[in-house]
Amino acid sequence: QVQLVESGGGLVQAGGSLRLSCAASGSIFSIDFMGWYRRAPGKQREFVATVTSSGITNYADSVKGRFTISRANAENTVYLQMNSLKPEDTGVYFCNLLAAGSLNYWGQGTQVTVSS
Image (cartoon, rainbow, N blue to C red; front, side):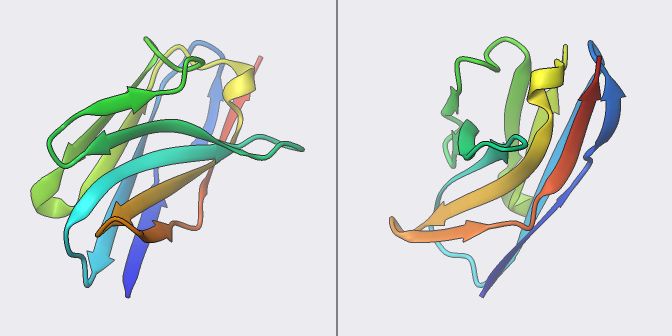
């Protein structure tokens, strides 16, 4: 069983920064990618960013240039550096891990609130 534990959420003013972390533990084999999704109040969960084991990154258009995803492969940890935060970035951020092509795991989520 794989567990994902997120940390780093909180309350920040618009224009500020936060750094999210997600540590994966358990029986982990052949990780394809790790990433972040978010769910804003009253909306469906949406893609934010992913990073492959080889370091290839992908971002949602809404966060390009402001967010940076990185990964420490040896520790099975993924980070999301969020700068120039906007109120519309508010939501619950979920860590995601895809392994062996079809094994999909989710964290419990961490709340990010950006005040105007």
